[in-house]
Amino acid sequence: GIPGVSLGAKFSPQYGVDPNAKYDSLRTPRPEVVDAMIKSWQQFAKKPSQVVLVVDSSGSMGGNKLPAVQNTLRYYIEGLGPKEKIGLIDFDSQIRTPVWVDGSAAGRDRGFQFISGLRANGGTRLYDAALDARNLLQQNLRADAINAVVVLTDGQDSGSKISLQQLNNNLKQSGFESDKRIAFFTIGYGKKGEFDAQVLKQIAELNGGYYRQGNPETIVNLMSDLQTEF
Image (cartoon, rainbow, N blue to C red; front, side, top):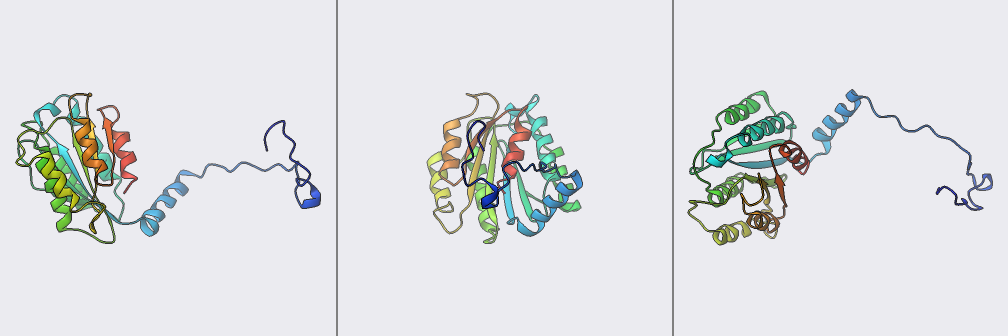
């Protein structure tokens, strides 16, 4: 009830209600119980997912930016459940061969090797990398799973072979209005003005996802929240 407000005539023993009853508050479950609940949800209730993470490793990712992303990716991989699979794409002036990672020991090792090999250098072929990620998912599409792309960049596109309009036209063919339903989520990484927030918002919002801004201090929590979407 509300303090100071009468419960009313029907809140009485006549109607099977004890207005003076006291109940113990629910106790916080033990850590092992919470862990078992999460594992059960991942195994039985959670929908499968395959997500391609597109990571900007251009020269502007130097300093503390890239190490923070590397730590975040390690945390992400360590949290992969039995129904989760991710593809990792590293891009600068080049777009490198994707690496598929799952929650198995071998899968995680592939992911950790990818992370260790990241170096900040070159330009930012953002549009080309985003389209490559979409193509990778389209070739490996799972109808029973969540299929999504996450793009993390700290800069504006430079050197792509396609324009933003060409990218949007291509993504529309596989977006939420199509039978493929590939979602896009974008992250502007760093300080405002270093990346084009409007472009990243457009890419995400036209394709069933959303845009967020992060920095080396917030990127772990941001990606952890995003991982719950899948």
